[in-house]
Amino acid sequence: QCTTPPMTNAGSVPVGLSMDGEDFSMSTLSFDYTHPASFLALAPAGGPELGGTTVTISGSNFVNSSELACYFGDVKTEGRFISNEEVECVTPTIRPGSYDVQLSFNGADIHD
Image 1 (tube, rainbow, N blue to C red):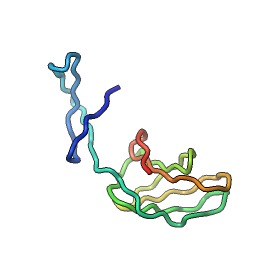
Image 2 (cartoon, one colour):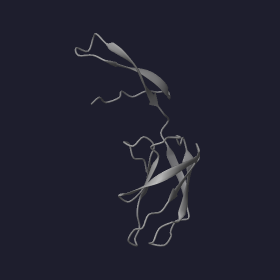
Image 3 (spheres, rainbow, N blue to C red):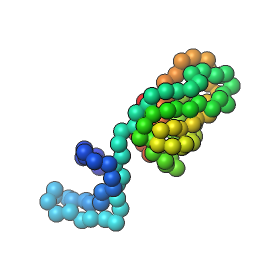
Image 4 (tube, rainbow, N blue to C red):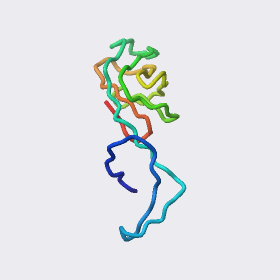
């Protein structure tokens, strides 16, 4: 497991490995840095507990990914990329209440 260093620019970078911090072996793999996603709006803001409501999340820097997922509280659902400013999610069956809505673009990091 490795932790990525901070970067100032978005883009693809090569991945290398070092056992001593000086000599690196570079792979053919790359890591894609993206700008942080930000959320501006959610519509509609509610729906029935049986789920099935299509919710549109508006914002910026959304990423088109096969691992795009929406979270309503801890319940994960599939997300649908519309544009870098819009994602759609279908609400799951869930107990009535107020839930945080979050997105994951890579299957690992969750954004709210």
